[in-house]
Amino acid sequence: MKNVLNHHAYLIIGEKESGEEVISNIFKETEIETTQDPDVFVFDYERMYLEDAQALVAMENKSPVSLDFKYITLHIGSIVWEAQNALLKLFEDPGRTKFFIVSESKSLFLPTLLSRFEIIETPKKENTKRGGKKFLDASIAERLKMISSLLEEISEGKKSRRDARALLLDLRTSLKGIDPKKQSSVLHALKYASDTSSSLKLLLESIALSI
Image (cartoon, rainbow, N blue to C red; front, side, top):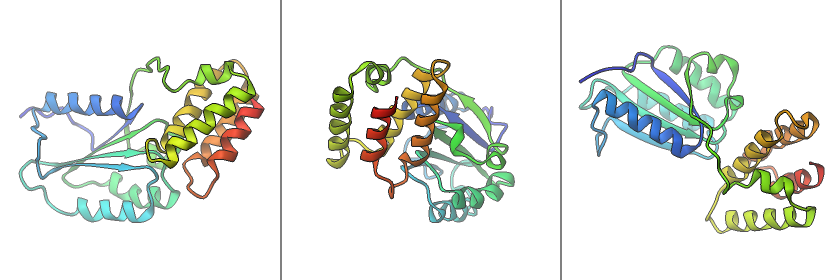
């Protein structure tokens, strides 16, 4: 089996689908068969907490069953600082585990944790379904209607807070180099969008009125 994974932890910046594509290509290059393998794991965290990080530390301490390494993919929408601190030692001195962390923004992570990663940025794709440009071009009434529709889908389980973050991320990209003040407002909302204690309705409506 070829081994092109020289690092222990890879941070893949991009959408979930793009990250999965990168990881799939890595597995093909390394000739690792991932189907139902007991050493391949995938976890999806809307928001990663301390107990999630502690569970990973416990898992990392176990030896692989059939492969040379365990391969753990983490899709992270957001992560609390306590969890990041718990992961510092894990990513600094890992055992027989390779980690793939997929997230849409480096800004979620502490600089000390970022320094443990090899960073891979996926190409940005034109994505009309998120509608950042459409949102900017819409009237306030139309924006509020878009927000109401998104919140309804989230409450029905068809979408999640990650989709709200995706809209904000797309807005941030659309505003880059155009209006720093408005972009700053979006960045402020992004900090709280994944926090389940914050009101998405208030955050998004505030953005609709201020940009």
